[in-house]
Length: 379
Ligand SMILES: Cc1ncc(COP(=O)(O)O)c(C=O)c1O
Image 1 (cartoon, rainbow, N blue to C red):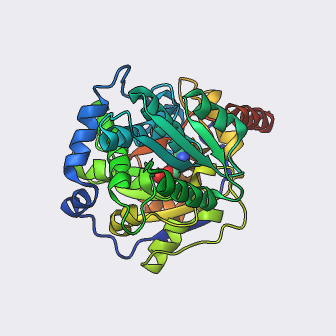
Image 2: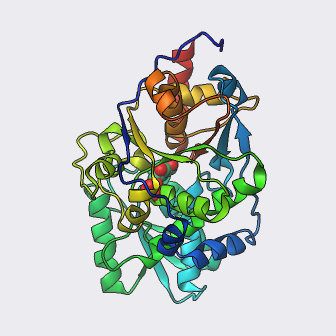
Image 3: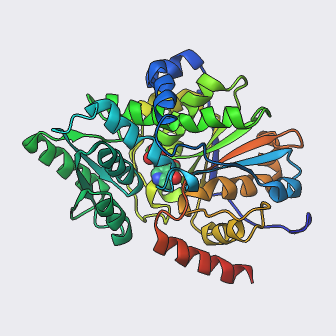
């Protein structure tokens, strides 16, 4: 990759948050500072725990003349291949305290359910997983192999969540959901606290101050959990940029309007975990003031990014990145190739950019398809 070659990648929309006001205390109050501290203490004690690698995308930072681009490689998170392993499994342990008479239940697009199934399996609990008709059979099989009963529901994610709530009420199951709603906030706070562990690890992995962080959002749990980690562990607060699919930009639209907005998703993005129409209640309390900017992207460059990561275009080592691991890179490239936005974001030779490589080949079939497609585009 030469320094003159251009990608020609574009973002869809970019906005500023006019209500930006980062307040460490408020953020930690929302997530629960004790939860944030406890999550690291507990999770770092789990068998086979290892911090996931913080990889330098040195070839990409050289190209755009940035000081560093760090990529947090969550493909190596336990054997679950996504950051979600930190949230659901932690909440299962906190809520059930290992009481084997408790059955846990959740609705999921895949990765959260995998974490809940694994958390239940670790503690010998029964587990019920509700999935929509859009969740692949490969993802369902992974959860079955972790000992869960997988129940497929006609309709979308919301339908699977409604069915999960209904059946849990009837059967007395404990719902371990990563999404919050009125009156259901404790478990989502725990899952967010679990995600803050990524930031604690990063604070141990580099002594460079992060200047920019790109955070993917579906319902905003990962992003707000990471922000709680930033409030707790980072000495300097980086610019925080939320990335979403253009067809499901509920955080962007909510930030723009200054209040939560529900979106009617007309076309599902390939970034399935991020194809969400509404911000979750607890994350919103954090995101509304802690985020500097929001950016949205299409699916167009995903396959190529998957292939470029695997073929070492960006780093010295090969990286296995699933669809939801790519948007940080795509939006950073699109922003860096737009002079106006690059200037607005103050992306320059002093910048240390952090990108979240949220998942590896969590859906192996989709990963192979994207990789092959991407390789064809490279040649
Ligand atoms: C694999 C995966 N699933 C889901 C999400 C969305 O997380 P959340 O719904 O907590 O915002 C992400 C990242 O944003 C992701 O990478």
